[in-house]
Length: 333
Image (cartoon, rainbow, N blue to C red):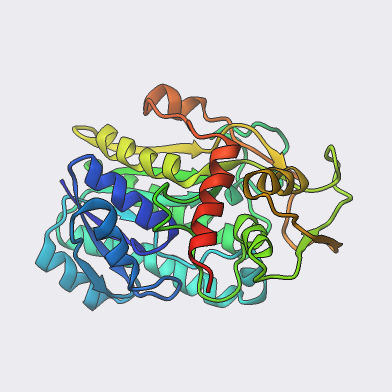
């Protein structure tokens, strides 16, 4: 099976490419390297022993993306490409709406033109907004508290309408909670261009001395220690779920949605303590004001993915922190 992976040079994309290769599939990457590094391709080859083809193409560029479809003729697509920082989306909403929604439309149009019917879409738990129940099931009410979340909400709706218009389409929506960790080799991990937006790389940069301290956004939430609680999932577990989704699509049609998380929540300060244990470093932090768009508690009900995909998160919080520390300590910039 040849799989076109948009955003395949990014954090989740690279780990998924490794799992696709391990499953005997043939990934082809499309990435414009707006938030990733071309040298990651050499690292993928080091891990897998396979040179993965990659096209330096923006998923919003209809002509360039069409040329890739024309040349490669993929069997299916995994669509990761998109802007992904909640805080930045609040500051730059138009950039997020333009990029993320246009990418979904352009990918779907290219698939239609070249007769590709199967798609796995990278969505997010942000589509649940400020949830009124936890753990959160897939049929919980949908909304959003920031532009990034709305782009995922709208992207899902676009794909539901596409599936409704063509009964031969096979679309799987995967709603990620909070991916963390890195490949056990220490060769690939979360490596954003510029300052990180996610908790784990911020903690890791404090541990390596690259960052003076961690800003903890709010300690007055209704949680056990006042800091926000999230569902953290190891990126390798997350990547394996994409392989299971592709396998589950074979010979079927329609659209399905699955939560991908560990099914439990950890507070910011619990994450700090776990990383201190894994790294042997003290993580200095400062309590600052809450961020716009953040919610108090968010973790997944993952029973549907377990039942239908035969998938569940296997790696522990200790694994997440140990692998993130190995990656960060070996790749200080």
